[in-house]
Length: 502
Image (cartoon, rainbow, N blue to C red):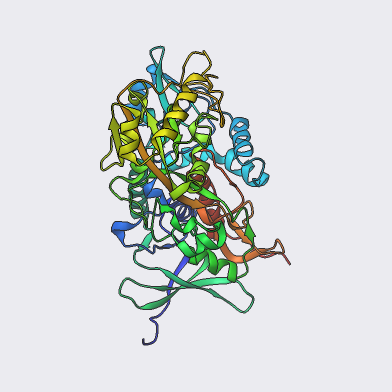
């Protein structure tokens, strides 16, 4: 190959094309910077993992009326029928500490929680459209749509709408986006400062881009089977990739090799119950998040032997779903089945359980269902009989932790309903990996730190390649808001860097 072309120049270069990257780009542009975004994927496959999400965003808020100014017209019209309790900063922080069992960076928690509300309001001004997620996060009770689990806010049209809105806002403000432009290396000067990148353009030519500061927001390593096995352990190479197939971790490795400190839990990740028939090496851009199966708290989950292996009702699904994918991966064949009957089937999320194609079976007896799904029939019958006989007599209410427990091992702590009303339904699920939790260490401005704790000059980071906030588990909707908060911080600071102190 011949000599590279003359370097492209910008004030700030953003590597990545998902929510965190766009937030960094918007913030830098607002600060007056000329911004260049380098996106690895083609335009019709762009958007990072954000494109594949449901667009759920966890924020502290004062209830439905407090959120009303940023909500779309259709949602505001439904507020009289809506019951949404306030979700305070203390609630949000407590959830992060609780679900990670204290393995979260307290300084990062304070920043994400404290800036969550203002960041959602800022995104509204940028052009992101917000709504309340009735179909995902509310049940009808007492004539009201009652929200549960601390999560209500989402983007109009989910992840697809989020990326469409971000892209339109970038185009309006003059941000330059280069698609099909994977970064192949970071450029450092004699002092070690990051001064630019090498990238391959859409025509296959190796080029350089130079800038006063760089924001990396290119995701984790979840789409690379070798890196998964190396960091997460044996067996993780079999997990299905829920989202973007280009999140393969090379930019994260480049940052580490350039002097960035590792931070957070590199041995765990966000993984969920995912349709067992889904494509293995990347999400479906039409169905996106519809391939998830998240109504399991209403039913039971069994393995190939017909045995239960987790507490489906331990908590609202927002606080368990991101760790249960790993539990499914441990089962024989890495597969499990969510089972429901005629009583519980109407409560399932329509967008997930009525989507097509879907890997499931329906039968009039448990034995017929077991045969259709490949479950041991005798084991399933024993499990269901024991489960049905162990349920405590308490009112069933999916909007609260109702204490309707099944006293078996493992227990089901809430929302237990006897599986006894035909027809019976079974949905085959496996482990779908969303994103990895380990990453680089950043300060409270989004600047990347070295092992000594000093800033790595010229380098900022946001999104899923930043470590420290999550470990082992994750409260639903926290990823997009963390990416937005740190993206905004990183972009603003990258555009207006503080001169080095003497």
